Length: 476
Ligand SMILES: Cc1ncc(COP(=O)(O)O)c(C=O)c1O
Image 1 (cartoon, protein in one colour):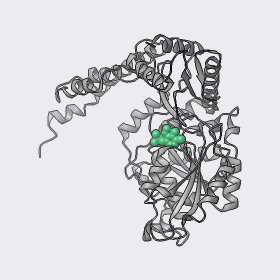
Image 2 (image 1 turned 90 degrees about the vertical axis):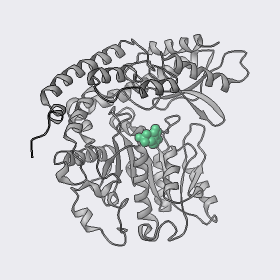
Image 3 (image 1 turned 180 degrees about the vertical axis):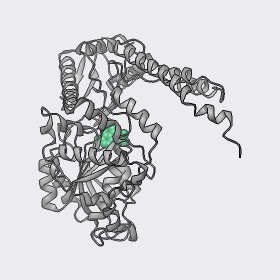
Image 4 (image 1 turned 90 degrees about the horizontal axis):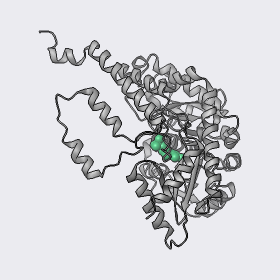
């Protein structure tokens, strides 16, 4: 058989890759410099239909790769721009972007050790580091997976297998009494979705109301437990938030852990948003009690400034890491093969092929030290506080609540506007279509608020003044 044709050899040509790579790094660095200088839009808005028509017309061969990549970057929402104050998505540390290139080029799938002889021990080291930051002891362990939603599914599958009291793999969801968990009415939607996927139906989620600080207290959970009794559902777990999605509020984990221990319930903490606080001596106390949780989900692609997706699913007892996808309940039979082959990470996750996602965080921790991550969290929180103070001082804006960390909810309340919800919804849409700033919105109870998550540590307090002026100027 003849050797690979020219087209294949060209596509894999290291020298072409070198040239394109060098040029691409210049494009990326220029993009960062421009964004940091507040040049260009944050959202290069185009109506969805027009965007679909334009990108759909692209020819499928003969395009210049660097030109394509440059135009994709120019037409993407610029998270590195300090006027991006919207979702819980960070401008990634640039060093992590370089690490990502190695992850992609090596493409080590990781389900079994030999498909990630560097990535597997690095992942185990990252998991151990994060468990340590939570205050979990030596018997803790876990796995990295692709996103907080999948992380919640993984943790709650483990909860079910450990606490259902029957073998859910063998018997299915209906192999025992109907089960339920208690969570707050502000839990991330992935929690309800997970339980629906698990076949628990709508009654599988019992919601406890949040208090005035948007926290789910033990008293609220106790009341929900009380009313759940007699409903025919057996409650097996409490799902708390450490950094709720809408407001970034932290549930009182200590008192919830106390209650969970007393009632013999599994305590899962969704710290997808707020887990990064564990690295900040200033804000660490918000997580007090997390060390008593059974499982924790922690997104590194939020406060730890990694490119999406890198989620840690951490268990106080490492044996639970094998239960989510165990074909046999470990309380019935220890699945010795999975645990004795701890180096084959595929037994702990839904994913078969998995990106070597620990590499970004591991290299960034080694390059910068923990201190940088603490400084970033502290700055995000201080910026959110500064923004809240400006909103408090502005007569035509209303702050929904004091931010606990880095999520600020607020609304424009100019005199003479009868329907403030409609006004703020329309205002946000104008902000997005204008593109010079980016903010989002959320419902808190029955009221619509604008919402800014302060992720970019390069924001300056004056950027908030500019945002408020911008919002005023966009009013009709
Ligand atoms: C509290 C919380 N949990 C889970 C998630 C889902 O995480 P992901 O977007 O990584 O799937 C989010 C996302 O914003 C979140 O805020």
